[in-house]
Length: 551
Image 1 (spheres, one colour):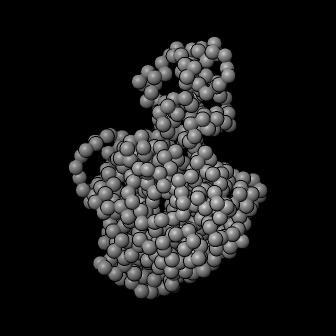
Image 2: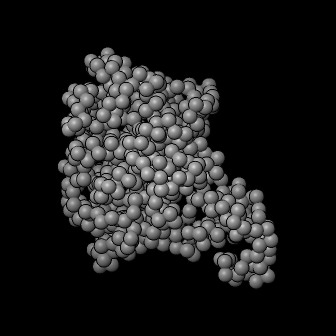
Image 3: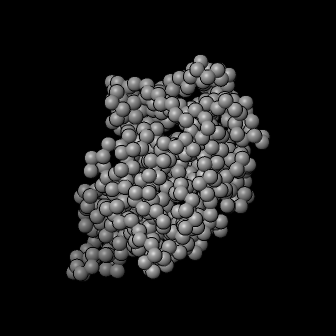
């Protein structure tokens, strides 16, 4: 990683790249030689600043021939002296999109542990978390700190901060495969260290002994609060006991590897779980108030583009599914997978780029406006893909074709917000996993700009998590999110929807609906640790990891 960053920086300075487009092309060129995907600008900048402090790139330093990828150039050109160049700092500015969804996203990776899965398509690399490759950007960052959760969080916060992003409100995403298959002691310790890293930042207090409860309590009023925690797992790994443990950790969203809703496809790909287990896991999570994200994999062995499109239509309309978010990862063949052997024997044919583009185009036309398409392709380097879609900018290609996508991500207001924007309150009721879901949003009159949204679940039975989380609450707010420029805690900005109090208005409307229309006497919120103080100010009290209010 260090050699990659060093080469990118030296070549950028030597070539005097003028535009972000030129810089992106340079990064792709160099990463092609290293056989890795292009790293994030924030990580390169972090390395750049530290190394200048250490005088790796001192004034008048010489670029050695062995460190340049500009092959075939005259030596005199390669050996000329390089001056530190301020232009590189502008090029290394990360995209504003990092915090324009209203939160600062911090992704961390757990270390390798055996997984129960035997999936055909899953790449298996020594000492890497199952399904992850060592040349993926997130993995490369984790490797540099030996998968230490404390260092991963602090390093990512620094990278975001030096690029001008507010980092007060953090959405923590824990990657690394099936979280439930990790040893419980490791799970506990890993999450505790993530909270501690946020609490300590910008100070580094490595090695301090504390408990998870201590760090969660600190985080409620910390300068950098974890307002959401996402965990990855499999449908067959979830039961009431596991979901209760997730809540003790502070989790608010769960991403489950659904991949397909056809049992014959699941069996052919050796997934090891059934569609019925996906349906059960979805209900358990929603009844407990979690946001549910599906990982879907079109192009699997035994499927087809036609069958895949029918699958997405089914999950968007069948009440047994109805995910809140989806990540679409078209199946690809990598050398270190069982699927590679079948592909070599012509027993499997992967989707090509054209088929993937057409399928995504059709999916975007039918996605409900209350679903968020978080990702459209895995960040696997093209050098590792033997067969299957290998376009990293699939979302942009599809958008350029003029598709009208109503998903949350495509409508988030980001920075396109004016103080005089007209907003209307919209409501959609639908049935999901045996109960009533109510989706509320503040959006522009034409619905193309989304400012704020809320998910309310009405349950005429008590929470399905019976031991010992029974709260006797009929209504649960599963998500409240206001988009636009992230504001620091306590700060105000008239150009950001976060200034307008839209979240409070949606919560008040949810309370009204729960009481007046459904006769509920209590309402609960599956609040992240760092947002508990916000709900206390609205009259909510902490009970069994949830914020509860009588209405």
